[in-house]
Length: 401
Image (cartoon, rainbow, N blue to C red; front, side, top):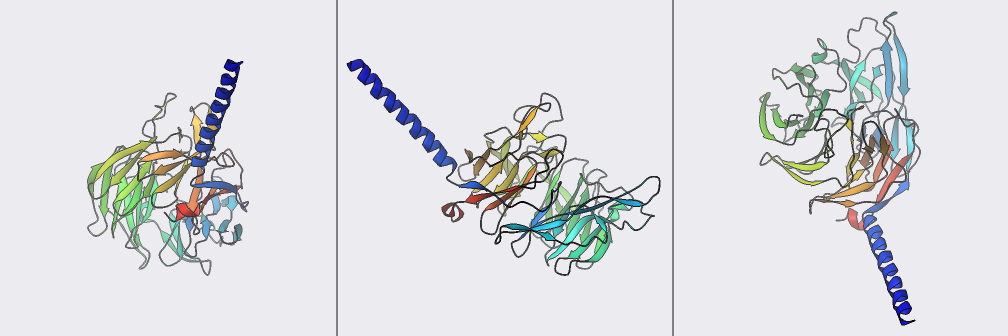
């Protein structure tokens, strides 16, 4: 009888300990915030750029895609997805009536004076176009009018390359354009509408990433592991340092001296891709020109070889914490999509398990909102036709850290 009583108390005590540990784990998961369902988008988007406007609203790029028929040489509309704006104050998406005078793809930059630069544009009404989408356009966001159409000089000779051309707004207002496929580049000044093809020869490195640096410089992270610096004042290129080397990695500037790198592809495609491919998180220091791996992702989040992007997304919660969400896992022949998230802690150089999202997301976008929360939406409709969104509600005490 006494033994049975002891066993009973031990069982109860063990149960309480298990419940306590389970509760503790779940409480820590929700320490930073939680996910709620967001508003439904007006349209389904595919590989669209998104930017934060000066008023804090989020602009999702649309497309007005015309293709020239080989037989008739006449451009035909193949896809038209309007722009839309997310208003955080009203928590809804609004149709943004953007002009369709020209054909354009959903790629661009916000310029310093509330104007938009569309980076792949052409006049579909003309029948003698050698290279469609070889121009750029400046659009006034207030009047919603095309103010200027600019022929890219690098595309007078070479066909526009959507996947391997980067457009970087330098801190002096100039735009550095690099076509890594054809190893040619130019710099464009939108204020005086002038451009110049550069004499530098960039390496043919697919999936290289470029980020603005200092007043008039840019750093180029190529997939061989070199970090190069382009100086707009001298128009010269030089190697500064080394890093792990990633194709289509994710780059985020942490501060004036540090750049966060993760994801991407460190190996050529095979059916036995190493399990650590793109899983290491590193920081490149621009003061010392050195790179250091600080930790790894907790959950394996694969590189999407088909679309040549990291399948997960990253967004800052505050200066210390970053939210990493979703992606796909499994093998190249059989994969599944993830609801899980993790929090990157830059102070302690580690990742912490985060709360699950409401739905699985991969090849998606995340962007911080002016109230400190984070908007999540799908941006790839090869597999999903989803217009649903989620919002990560960041706890007030975390926002103020």
